[in-house]
Length: 360
Image 1 (tube, rainbow, N blue to C red):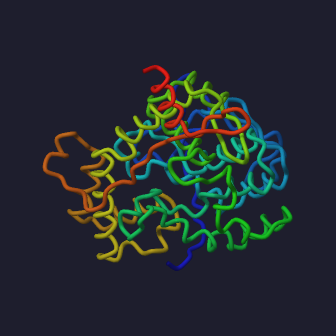
Image 2 (image 1 turned 135 degrees about the vertical axis):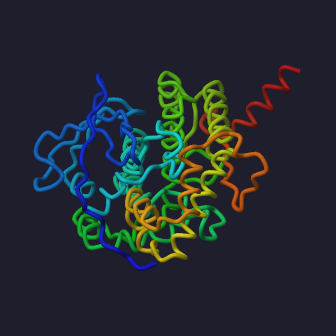
């Protein structure tokens, strides 16, 4: 895919609801949707035109937080990173469910904060901040358009995004090379394969489940407070909290991430994008922009097929699932987290099996 310059169009603001704190997302697809429950309060200056010396906000997962590292703030301020503000983590599902307000920007900051909380080294914290920088518009929608066995098409674009002049300069100013962050697999707290715990998985789970009202704030706090690092492995301290996380994660997978509804929405949107490419209103480089840009391109086609596909998403009804067979199925996710035992750890499933044998 040919690279395009980060989009820097100005967006008008939408008034917040009475009593609502924080900024509101103008990327509302025609609806007044709050961006998140995040309150941004730079101590000095703004991202555009002036250096920010401190960033303080109320995060939906971690509460009152701040970032004061000048190099990290400079990295966050780069246009390529700021692009993530316009990419919803829920992809096209946010068109149907306006409460899905989590953005890749919010999640990226969250992973950085969680790694910092867990005591990860600075390079791993930076890797967490940058891990989603190459996500294309509408997040995983592209994985329903192009072949991607692990539904991680964006990973193949990471070197290109990290090599952009604005990002490369900001990364090198931190004393490291962009190439360090091309592959996250050597950062063991940041990334682990399913069904392990890792900072990326924990943050998107808690963030999405709070947005979808699957997890309560109290439950999220209990899950976070129970985390411990054992031999570079994130684990729970108690089987009880591990069970809570496993159950809530399974609920998110069943009812949201891998549900028939999500399969319908993502496949319909992939059909719309496919037709957009065929008609020439959408080019590969457009996916390097943000959700609003891609949606605008699709709307410009005035295509009955595209309009019908997007209309079926925005007006989704469960009856639409009758007789529907998806071309591509969403990725199935599950947890079997480590639980601290003595000086080491054991998988949750093994702890449950042992408890069942003892109780027999």
